[in-house]
Length: 469
Image (cartoon, rainbow, N blue to C red; front, side, top):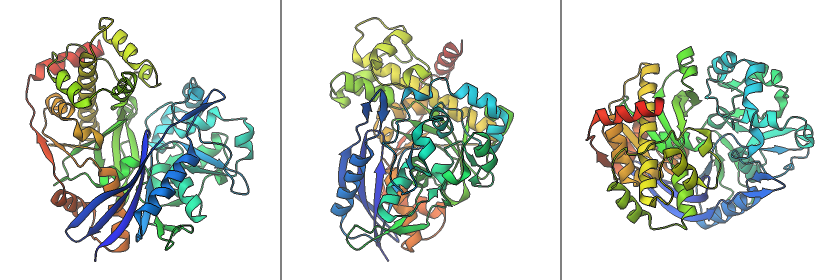
């Protein structure tokens, strides 16, 4: 049988509702509705406009027409707080807000960096949910809260009335036991939080409830609600020895493993172990992705990207590189200025040269992350799959192949929505099998582009050494 499924996919700058039709030998997406995701600064705090997002979701689901079910995926770490009546206590705070500045160190010292990593397996990032909650300690909002829901779970609650937390997003909070796949209750208590603040956990493929206000009251099904978890489902790998880069605002670069890697060396390298579909582990590092490019384009009044990338491709290779993982690149505003100063570029440098600096630097970050992931896990990769918006960027894909010395297979661009649909379709019985069968369906139904490595390995090694010096 063929089923029809709605994928709600919210990213950092836009949201969309995609309609997927899936069945034996068939997997096709169409866009029902796309809408902006525009954060709002109020009272000195950067918020998500969650009601505007929910309005866009409802509009898209109504435009999608009759569906068997719907699933929701979004970015990670951010959350909404509900009071005892189930009402939202203010707009969720954006992970790029400055409230977590200076919080990571004291919390890590209090709880112990070894304990944190051994329990949660999570990369130390200043915006992890743990540090956001530490920053909110003592506020009336947190004192009044009776439930915390991650962003996709909050939207599902408004549709169904059911309060649950899907596991792949829970695993990004740094309050989740990565071995046992349960909330880390002792850690939660020691962090000064109440265990009952956190909703019951559900696995991807679980039916949460019915969307009561939509025609036909379709089922709401838990998918890989962390968008990277959904994207990795749709990586069109033909075997087990692959690396992936889910490339958009962030680049999530890593491997799919059966067990977490919780060694001292892995912790020192700041790798993360996030829960994936079917009990898998996404062993990866968050790399600063295309965010710097997106910010520069905005500052430059959105010039023609194709022309800019063509000009960037003609710039000297590896002339200027920066460490994109430097926290200085995290906030919005004056991105081109920061890049120019840190890279040692002259004032007034042409945009094409700045873009080449960004893409060379991002390819270097991919190289470092994927080589370390293989070394630390003992798991070999002989091909890299780039999925998401970055798969459209032919220059970045070629530079990543050159930097890593491995072939790159680019596509599908809509991997997150496809993975969302595939989990729903399997839950409904429209498709069967494990991840191997789901990925075969993606490979058989979508166009992919391959990039072979070329160029001078020594030049990439020298550029890497310059950054490390």
